[in-house]
Length: 222
Image (cartoon, rainbow, N blue to C red; front, side, top):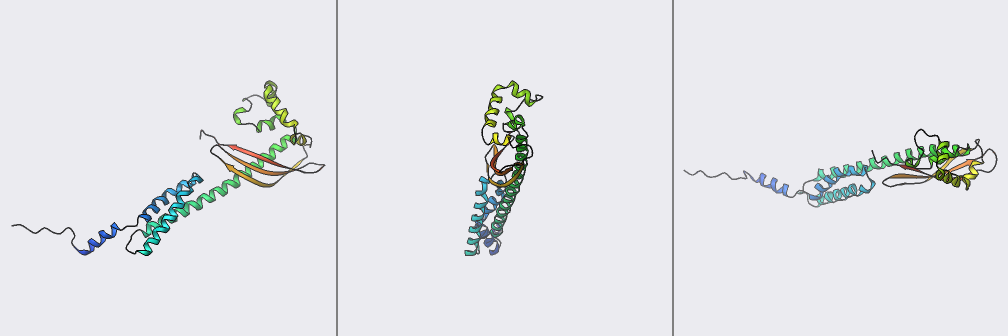
């Protein structure tokens, strides 16, 4: 006796459910995926395009849902939008805090360096203007270094014999320094450059405004 086979779909509800899955909103799925990948903006500002795309696709997914309520994926669209906004806000906060920290540290470095110059510590001040790889050897005093390295000594004298360095040397150790404003901050893959304006006020005479650039090199070994 041959028994009748049972239909794969037991009722109309299951058929409708599978049809609904087939109409899932592709834009919502892409928005969710890009929302997760938006964490990359914390590593590089160039990846800002990822959360922006997540926002655009998420908005498109929500618009499609309003036009066709049979589409699925509304939660996925909101998920992608939320993650994109979260990582963008985190990145903006990270940039602002990092900018303030960089300028604050540069401010102190510049004032310490100016004090070295007006105190007549030309050798130490010149060392601070050089890259780490070109500075004096460990265990050797700066005086010995410049006495032994004629090229470095000549470069130092050329810098401090020209204005405004020569003028700073004549101001005296009682000179005061004050930060006026930050002008620019630029990044590249190897360093950060910060430009600042400082006012140099000697114990007697007119104050002098100087624009000083501070460069922070990144340690590639890290």
